[in-house]
Image (cartoon, rainbow, N blue to C red; front, side, top):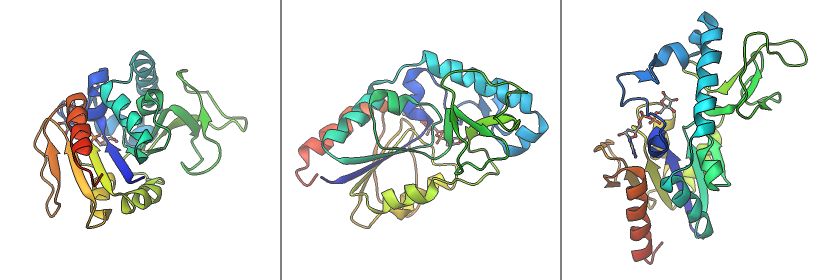
Length: 233
Ligand code: APR
């Protein structure tokens, strides 16, 4: 089986009712992104951050995987598939994808605030709220298991390894504006075929790729059609 890497961003979850980041004037669900998605934000106002991620958890509990998530999961029967997602939601999992790298963390997980993202101590809390005073067994405040601006991206090396081995790379629903994730496309082999699904035209200097200019669900149908027609895949 060929190796397929799907690099997904907020746009893949848009049809599930979850807003993207850069389509709403720098606001993430009505909050300035730097206030709710940076380590400085956590030190400035942890209570606001916890409330924000409590809201995200409730929203994700209500959301359902859309056709694009499901079609990505279905590709696992034909390809060695790795989903590298920048999304903190769990919609790829719920659609059935098995091999998922969450570059920016997972909203359904928390960890003590003195614990690094790659250390033991991560706790799966499902859709529960976390508030100030909710601590681990050592009395340390719990924080969302999210990679915020100003923090390391510990899953980057696993993602690079997957992209380096890809025969096909599909970028879906990402503006590729945030590094280091955006730089992943440059780790592909020369013979890797790169496709990009996004309703807006995307330009990437120095990269040869085919854009499918559609929303995620329609784009996935067209992508699968291309795979079907090309016997090299
Ligand atoms: N289907 C597919 N793509 C869509 C759809 C849709 N229905 N609607 C919007 N898009 C596209 C937009 O055109 C845009 O190019 O999805 C992309 C979303 O881009 P961003 O909002 O920048 O999201 P993303 O690339 O995932 O952001 C990366 O930034 O703030 C951080 O950590 C956060 O993981 C996030 C990272």
